[in-house]
Image 1 (cartoon, rainbow, N blue to C red):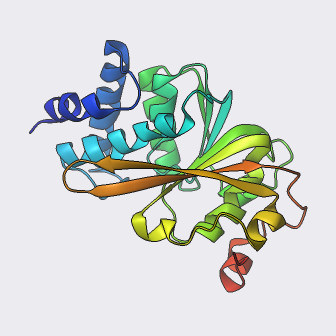
Image 2: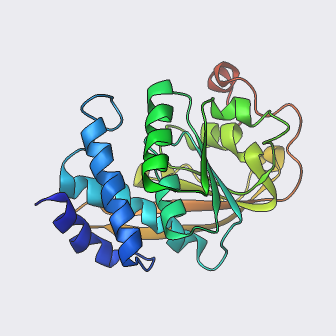
Length: 240
């Protein structure tokens, strides 16, 4: 199955309405992702149908999790090849998207593909998420924050949640195993001034099963001591 056919087939299941112009931009982006992956290690997923489902359709479910609560700005922390941030920018040009990626080759790929797609609502910051979260120009400046690929949920929360503005929302993509870590309340929420809101559940085709997006909100200012360095977080993470 070629890429265009795969996207046409699977994007019918998208929670967001995809116009012809949006589809063309998603197709161009997906082609760039596959082609440039031969030069750089952008993703382990390169088969056309898997790209359509595991990357594009999965990213589109961010719009399902947001519903009518569309943010004015979105930080995509540790975005990698630009997922879900670029897809969010394509389907809603009113969202100002900031892609945060520390890897230089990936950051350059993002800049190139943004220019190719003429996405005026997207910018790239080449830096670690926790460094950005301590930057006064970025700390608590985004009405929404998302992160799609991470190991431990509590680590992701400390690294990225300080980017979220007061009363803003945070959207963490989680596997079935990762979502088991989640509790609706506990010490980590008190420490980071967050509130558990909901879990958005969805199912991906190709027998990939259920996926989840954990939704949190900010209730107060992040204490100045957070986020700590990544090394300190790994040694002594905040417990639930």
